[in-house]
Image 1 (cartoon, helix red, strand yellow):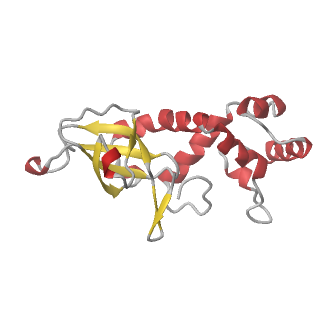
Image 2 (cartoon, one colour):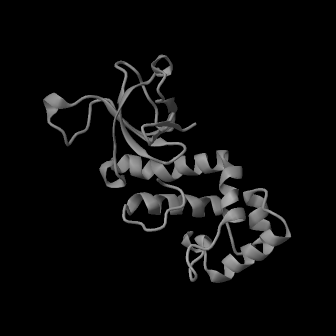
Image 3 (tube, helix red, strand yellow):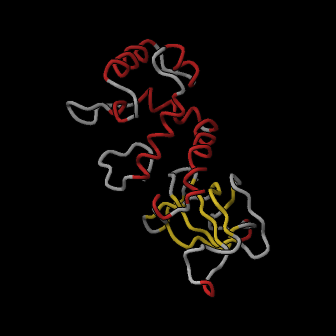
Length: 190
């Protein structure tokens, strides 16, 4: 759940992308502290985290980072928000797998993109922002959703035969938005 504090939305849970118990290798050795990189589950914010001492964190763990300090059993504090380029190569390579898990766990939220997408401009539709989805497929989706809304990714794939693995298309778009901070049109990442 997102809570709003001073106009800044806060993530309550993150998925661990990488855990560095010895600290970041690029930092000065006497200033190295254990750290983790996490992905916010709602707004896909990339965060640098300080874990509690003597806590073992595994890649893919879903951990609480919300305001209730009593519930924080793994993470001591959120250090800062980071960009895609700031996270480790290991975190970058884990990102697609963790994103796919998030998308599949929240299928009904992401299927709404296909059911509710609207034109962005007179020449560009939101569906066209999804990687590999062209005008012909976009028009097919728009015609099919007029008949009845899509209820799942499998329903979408059955009714739109040219659209395979829609969850992977969403993951690619999320990563695209993370990689390019100057992206003009954002669907998923704040």
